[in-house]
Length: 167
Image 1 (tube, rainbow, N blue to C red):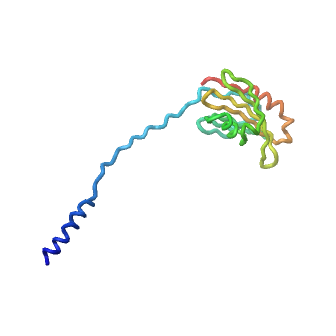
Image 2: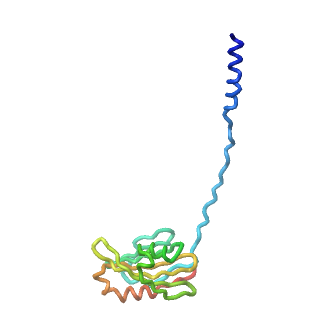
Image 3: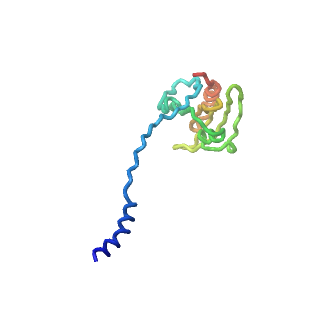
């Protein structure tokens, strides 16, 4: 009887030996910090008096300036296309905007305006957008639509003074 039990257990023992736990050597991972691209230019403009820096982020790539009657936003970012850049700045596609191409060399320059809903009513917005082949640089203005005519010359002069300067 013991021989029969041993004979029946022999295949079971051989089968279970294949289920042994195998140790795998841990691989060491070395992480390389991501190479962050740096824009070759910065956006320069003659900001109106009374506009003060309210916030800045992304190592200076994004800044908000406030005035009691309007807000200025300055941003440097990468986008896959002009349409993606316009969508980021305005929330609208290029088909929904009248985009004026002002200059094509050495950097592309575009101007456009749109309206948006604000917390207290409609906002009048306008912007200038530069493209250096790698990054988009934008300066935009938002103000209450009812006060836009009052500041039209200020905004026009501001956007006309915007230019890219080499880092």
